[in-house]
Image 1: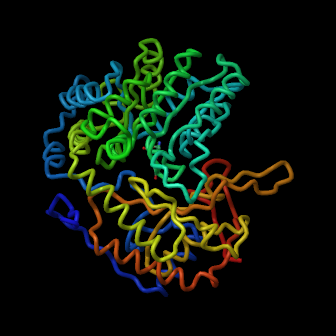
Image 2 (image 1 turned 60 degrees about the vertical axis):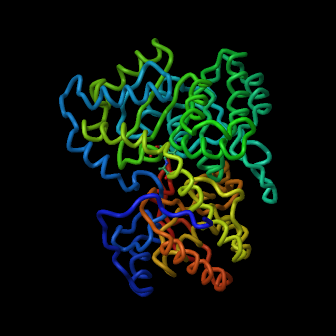
Length: 456
Ligand code: F0G
């Protein structure tokens, strides 16, 4: 069959509140043109994130009921620990309330003034945690990533040569860790090959560096390896993921993505001494070792989600439905990052709105247009998210002005996606009238979450 169907049927539904354009214009103004500040009932299709927005399965809901809420030694913890150990092979597992808590615990210990972290691309909370410790975060993504016309399947790869140069320049003793983000969320949701992970492992072995996987979308990444990397067609996605975990010394994991839950995460490590330090911080800041920041029922749902995510009918549908959106936008002439990643479609707003200079934030403009046009909420991941100022206060823009359309797992059906495509057709036809934006207020860190804007 040509048609790849959703490999599930729907048991519980949530209503979507429909709104008019006039209402949305008012809502957006009241939110100071920052869609993070919209109320969810003001949104028709929410593509802000794939994080914590999954629909859980009947089995996960049943697990919620079984959750053991004992403070210490909970059965749900034992189950989660077993599942994570079996999957990752790492002996030390620390439950956290979400991914960034694992990042904070690990990177505040490894970081500090004078330390450098290297990654294919640091996700924004990763970068913020590294920088908050006083360390520097440097992105080294393969040059292939910026070739718009290339359909190289592993544009999420790290530029290992560049990493080696930086290790030599900074001194191996000053490197906090090398972090491989799979898939590479901020780089377009692109996959990372096993060969690349192996090359990073070799570099780390050579210089005795810590190799950490930011593994929250590793099942989607494994699917791409199975399709596109030689020698992996006959392996299961679970085997592929386990092989990748085995190359690294540990992982940070936001369970809000590929573990199909609404909250949760973990830190998993090989090294006992490092784990011991992190465990102390865990107890001080998150919770006791057998629940971290989680309820027993959350741990139960994560354990089940980590099993369900490797169902290959699901992964085929998941990647196919994301590609369906990307391919249709491409056909409309909307500039999208290719190949299409697993969890999101990335639109190049800098190209779509080539009448807007970077300091008028074309990505923010597209995000606002999509909302006004159709009630679709998306997120800017260009110079609002990653821009900096030089000493003269001038904007140092991000490499690209992207807008991410992240697809929640098991939530929207094909007609929702067709509606998004139709909205883009209208956005394209009216592109010349989209205004630029200026920032009227911003915080010091992670400004995209809370900044205020106004149209110019
Ligand atoms: N690493 C990656 C690659 C992520 O995408 C995220 C979160 C985190 C770490 C942090 O995890 O949210 O559980 O604390 N990404 C979300 C997103 C927020 O929308 O892409 P968290």
